[in-house]
Image 1 (cartoon, rainbow, N blue to C red):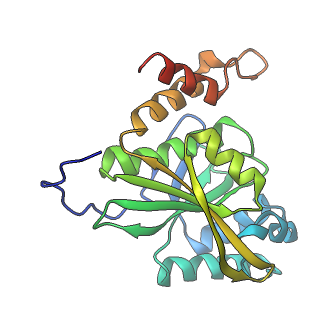
Image 2: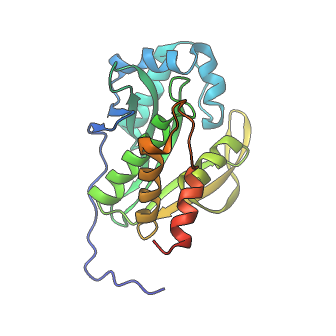
Image 3: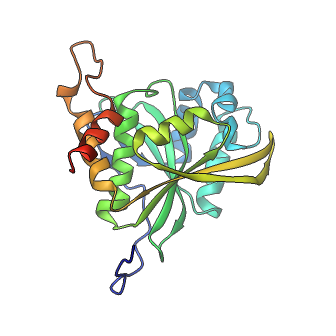
Length: 231
């Protein structure tokens, strides 16, 4: 497919400026404010298990977590977003814009971690909806990536559910504390985003949930229906 990019210009860098939804409020990472609450949201010392596939050094306390995230923001180009509850400010999780390539309009969402307060909840879906909206709708990026340890099956499921497309596995890409890492690559393109966005919005609509909070239609089902109907 030939795409006319004669008018293309480099895109602005994504920021962690606040984003607000019904189920989640996104704020910039602040080490003093967030290292302790993130540590607690991730289960204290069990943070090491939750973040195992990141391949980070072992952490013993909240300051270790804060130091790693702060260093990645200061020296490795991470832009970390913290997920909080809109009504209480409770810290629930995080994700980062990373591997940002403004020239080509490409960036990755990575180091995704949902603590117990938001795991498998509307807040998790809405957080990724808001982050993708910033990349595509506000900044005009062409490609949004999700990469993961190929052994991390829950992350595979999350990427597929959210509408990312599997592209393949880079074998023996890195040496991590746990050993070899084969990295699976997923992407979402600007031309795919409109259907993905509509599906997310339809899934998040309160009418999609019954009185007990159970979904009436799954996110993938809604997206598949939109594609089938040519939307």
